[in-house]
Image 1 (cartoon, rainbow over the protein chains, first blue to last red):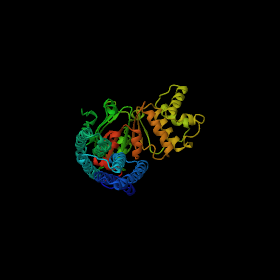
Image 2 (cartoon, rainbow over the protein chains, first blue to last red; image 1 turned 45 degrees about the vertical axis):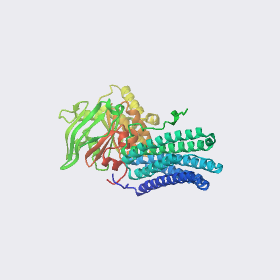
Image 3 (cartoon, rainbow over the protein chains, first blue to last red; image 1 turned 90 degrees about the horizontal axis):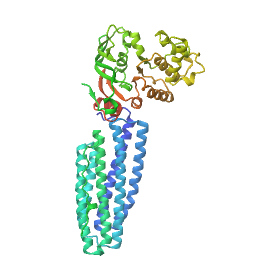
Length: 235
Length: 266
């Protein structure tokens, strides 16, 4: 397909939409990195910065929503343009939710750090976060280059996040059973892990949007969901 | 090669075709305006023909009721069938054919007669009414079907040209309906109308498709998307792609279609 619209201002609007989406994605990524670093170092100040940073993401989402509505109303896009505007609008919503989850992660980190509580083994949690960070980086590339193959790879990677979550869930349960004084901090870590697992789902949902955007078809097969924590009980 | 987008079972699979065009070529002298076009027109549906100026969509539309016969240098080859009969066979009565396949043009063109006479003219020359009452009934029914009766019922003897542009276009639709056609061809029927008059005609078309099959040529892709169930995209005299309207406007197969409908330089 030709790159340029006959009406130049249409191209400008679409480029602005792309920029806003990329900016949201890069803020989510940096927030997640900071939130993870804050947890590892029990750094309250960094966690506070993450909590405050979510506001910018919300503002960007509002701006993106307004622009998408303007494009739909004034440009009346068809075909790939229509799919692009709609899926970007939906994907921005997923990024905004990831922002909320990251903020919650930072709020819990502040609580843990303030109480100087023992959080136990978090290497698996760090690995989960790094997996989601990698997925987010790739999803931004896939969106920019309209790469459905890369989006499919990202979509499948969510299973690894789910598996890590299962493993961490068991680890933390064991840790809490060993010493009940570990429970308060571990409960927060469990919620943080669930937040990261949800972020993986959100990136996988964006991947699904990109596959539709580029191909015009929703992916056939259901995404493999590996999160089994709702079925785990240690006795 | 002509590409057909995916169609839904409901939209097209079960709908019989009232007209079929097979390998149609149209020449104006030596210049070929339509190249090997084949297209089925599903019954009681609206088919939109879209494409840039000069792509041949109006020329193709005019093949369906042999309007191109009126142009001396125009030559049509291939087969166009209406209810299974080849309309280009020599024995076909073209006047009768055009009463079965009516036409509405870009610019409303009422006769310089009263509103009543504009509608009564066709049924009268085709001998469709045996009495004055019957003729009156046809006129009233046609005006009602064209959504115009309530606006003109108290001034049927006033000139058709005294109506607004949108009303004149609906008068022309009533005139086409009056001879009881099965197919109505519309060549950019709303291009000279304001958005309200356009919306009234589009709403009317939606109602009309219960009784008639409509083929519309339009420059407005939004209009094609709004009113039609099937869309065919023409470019440089070729039918590039045809199929379910929703599929054409959300996920066309051909790059040329994609470029045209999304306003890109092809």
